[in-house]
Length: 402
Ligand code: KDG
Ligand code: MG
Image (cartoon, protein in one colour):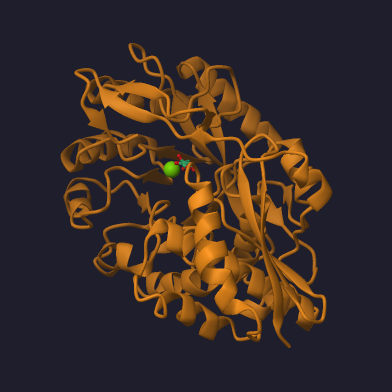
């Protein structure tokens, strides 16, 4: 059996997605997500110029060898563009293997460890009252875990909060918009937000929060300590993690569980964090960290250190990644939680999929492969549109972490 054809399919049904389609000489095809928010076409070029020509004629069932070939064989290792490209190929190969075996990928990985994967939704509001209301709406929809973000008085825009109520999509058409940031205001208002939410919804619901890399280690420690009375499920990206040691300072001051990793692209980005038990949840995602093959390695390593999974699942990860994440989450023994930011209806139409939301969980029936497809005719109606994530600046103009 041979790989005969490899294609990238770029579509923008509301936001940009890059999909890899691999077809074998026997006509079986597999899909992989290759979307890297704001850098989409760099991954397309990497794939089309440097990866696809090397894979024609290879046996698609040799997933591990192809992974090593693309990782070690390139000589240049890691990096988001490379690892997203490798991830897309890897997902497509697992999809093909599942279809050949007539089994879902969760079965190939080792079978189900649970009936469904618990997800967390996004509640956000322009102020605390709106945020509390959004949490209550999520509870009515069946969510057991809810991330809460709120506007901060004195700041125009805050990560996670849209201009209108409800849905929040950070990437915007055109060039990167600029937002301002004031750490002192944020640190003052966030514990108050969680006091109000916890008092409104009671002890049972899991509450999460994303600090989105904005804080220094000692500020992150202050935030996590101040949130302890409200018993969060986690604080995410409390401080940037390029220096993995930075998390030690947070740990020394707080017992609030920590999650990190949505921008990691390899096991080397989290080795020290995991080995030293400086975090509790690893958020690396299948699309940006080398696919199922590499995430399995990260998850197994994490399991040795009581670190659980909590994969990224924002709208810039296509339904192909979400399908892969559900397959992975059904199997992985050290599953923690899965982020779910639902796609718009048009995206779900372009990518018909087998996973569905039921009572706070994503579930999936016994379908071969990843359980996701692409309607190529519909996808072609929505061509790529340049879009970027915002950048953040402190009040004095200093460029900050968005
Ligand atoms: O592309 C960046 C977004 O996916 C990211 O900002 C969303 O932080 C995010 C999250 O936790 O979903
Ligand atoms: Mg995040």
